[in-house]
Image (cartoon, rainbow, N blue to C red; front, top):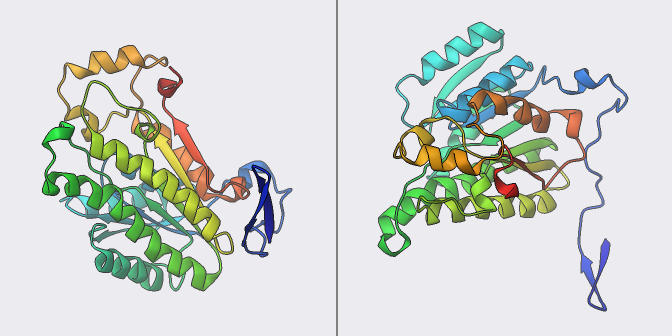
Length: 284
């Protein structure tokens, strides 16, 4: 039981007495703590953009990785290439994060078949983006973003959480966005921004609720050179660059180490955090 004082009153928070997971050897050499050897991971949105680099990074760190995709025509080849380059097992699984029963079945299949009864790490990375003036949203266009960016994260998390609870330990990482804590300009992306803010808070809620059996954290990237960015009007690039103190757009490969960090025992006391990696964009 945890007691917290608020404005002269005492609020009682019913938290688990089970301590957060701690590795057997907290004094292991630091680079060994970053190893994911023997771990089984799954990554939604793993066939494009940052997702490919997340899959590659986890595999390079020693994990076997299930690459989950929805529409890529090249997912199997991407998985095979990363497997060949890293020596890890990497397999592609088609699924739809916007459909609760579908992603749940996929996560369960990965745990049972690919993981031989285990699933240690799940990265909820699938996301979409569209420029729509806020007064012009329809139910369809609003839902098109939120069904993936928000609902899809929840359904992925729920499926992963059930596996984690059953096995007593797990690690969920959510790809949010710097848009969660600021408003992108000049593009109009109310649905995207709001959905990313929502999943950051969702991660905090789950981190508390799942303290007995899982860690939950977010990574919030800034502007990354992926299709989500390059599909935007070219004239916007100069405006974005002018607002980034770092003076450049990030390469997707620069994010893989952050995901490995959160997935590893190197940060075993970190839960409910949101790592903002944006070249200083949100500092202005």
